[in-house]
Length: 215
Image 1: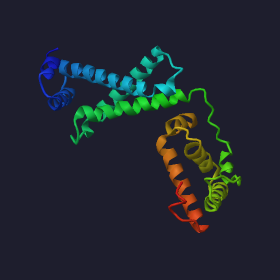
Image 2 (image 1 turned 60 degrees about the vertical axis):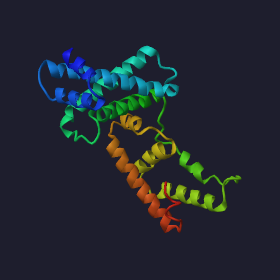
Image 3 (image 1 turned 180 degrees about the vertical axis):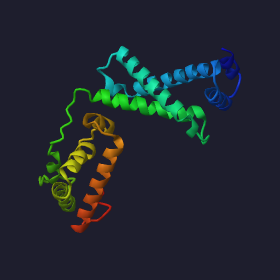
Image 4 (image 1 turned 30 degrees about the vertical axis):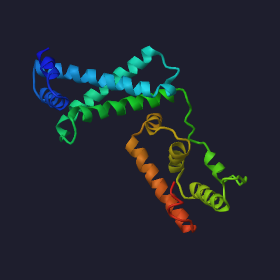
């Protein structure tokens, strides 16, 4: 197309600006720009999924292609919806690329955890207080871990404890947990923040250094 041919003769910065201008236009120019942006996003989603290939070893090439297309589609929709929020702090294409990296990352994590159980009643946090000696664990470290364990058990609500254990101890990706619990990332971040604040307060009250009590 003429739009693409003209862009091929300009600098990357000018190309990025021209793409943004075309997306804000109407008619065939906008349609062409949307197609070009989708192609850019698709390239980015494939790149991100390849980067995470070790975690997706059991995923077929066809399914990877499908995940990449889903990520590109959703990133495109998000970009078009937020086009007016772009302030030019970076190239438009750089700004847009971040959307697809996020979408591809979310899909990769969800797919990697597909079929894996997220145990919300898990009491693995109790193992923090395991008194078994080790070369690496000093007496002070053991006391701190026991204090954390007590605080998790007595100061957190059951819901806060579930979220803290899943995210902070069992390292469940937050978007995976949000999907399993039918909630939002923001709600989980709020719960985790409140849980950590309570734990810091409990550790401080027990006489443990604030910085060491950071969880």
